[in-house]
Length: 499
Image (tube, rainbow, N blue to C red):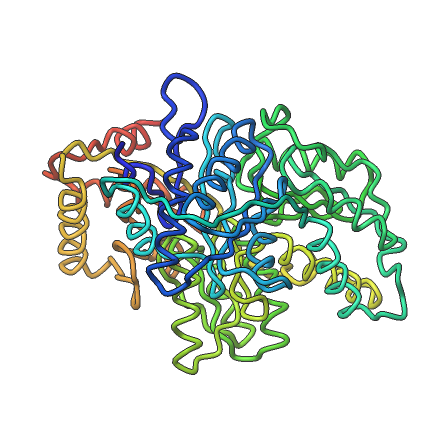
C-alpha cells in the first residue's frame, strides 16, 4: 500500500472503518514494525515502547496491531488501553522509562477515521521523521526480529496523580480541597477526558451537570472539538443551566481544550490565547508569545499592552511549537506556543501540546483570582475583538497545487507592493497578510491568504474591527486576483454577491 498517503503533518491518519478503510490492522502492524526498526537504526538495540488509544471503535484493534508489529521487530511493548495523547508522552518520563510511545487517535476527526501519533523523549516527532518511518514500511521484505514482548498496563491513574500534584503544588499542599466552593462543568465529548471531572471533584469542586464523560467511539452527542460550534454551544448551555462558575471542554484525545465563563461566554481561539498570555506575561515580563498566523490584530495589541511580544508564525501546531523551541534555544524568552485551534504548549511542560495542562493552569489561576474577588474573564476584559470575520477556502484545480497556489499569492503580493493603501504585514511567515485603514481608522481590517499545509486549497481569512468592513476588503482582493488560473474563486464571488 501507499503508506505516504497516510501522512497528516507529523501524524498518521486515515479511514479505519468501512469499505474504504486504508488504516487497517495490517497497515498498523507494518507501521509498528517500521517504528521499531527506525528506533533500532538510531542505535536502540531493543526499543521500549508504550502504546495507548482513544475511545474510537477501531482504536483497540489498531493498538493491538501496532503493538504486535513492534513486538515482532523485537520491541518491549506496554499497552495502556484508554489514554490521552499528553499522557502517552508523560509516560516516557516516568519509571520504568521508555524510549518512545504511540497514541492511537485521530483527534477531533469523525469516528470512522483514526491515526497514530508518535513521541520520543524530546517530544512529538517531526514530519521528516514520520517520512523516514513510513519509508521503512514501504521497503520490500519482512522486518522481523526475535525477542519482543507485550505486557498490559494502565496509565491514566498515574497521569491523574500527575495533574493532582500540579494543582496542589500551585495552590498549596496544606489544602487538599482547593476547589471547594467552585462549580465546574466538564464536557469530555465522549472522548478520553471524562476522568478530569472525578479529579476536580476529589479536589473539592462541584462538578454536577458535567456531561458526556463516558467514552463512546461513535461520539453521539457532539464532535469533541473546542472549535466546533455545536460543541461550544452545548458546554455553554450546560454552564448556564447549572449556574456553574466555569465550563471545561476537551477534544477526543485531550491535547486541546477551551473553557466557558459563568455567563456562558466561550473562551477559545483568540480569547483563550489572550487569557493564557496574560497569565504568562505576569510571570515572565517581556516574553514572546508564539501563535499561528490567523490571530486577530486585537490580540497583538493585547499582548503588546502587557509588555509582551506577539510572534505570529505559521499554521500547524508543530510549526508553532518548533518556532518557540527555536527562539528559546537562541536565548529569547518564549514560554508559550499556542494555535487558535486550542493546541497550547508551555516551556514549563516540555513544550507538550497538552489541553489538560492548559486547563489545569487556568483553573489554578481561577482559584487565585477568586480570593481577590476577580475572575478569569476579568483578565481579558480589554481584549479588542473584531466586529466581523470570515474564512473562505479556494480549491486549487491544478495537479501541482503548491506551485499554482504560490503563484496566486505572489500575484497578490505584487499587487500590494504597487498600492499604497495595502499595508503588507512585517515579519509574516506564511502567505500574504495585508491590513487596511477603513473609514478613517488605522489597520482596522486585514486578510491573510495562504496555502494549506496539506490540501490543494488556498484558505482566506478576513477580519474587520468595524461592521461592514469585510466586503470592501474582499472586493479589493478580488481585483488583485484578477486573471488567476486554476483557483476556484467561487466562494469570494458568492460573498460579494450577498445582499
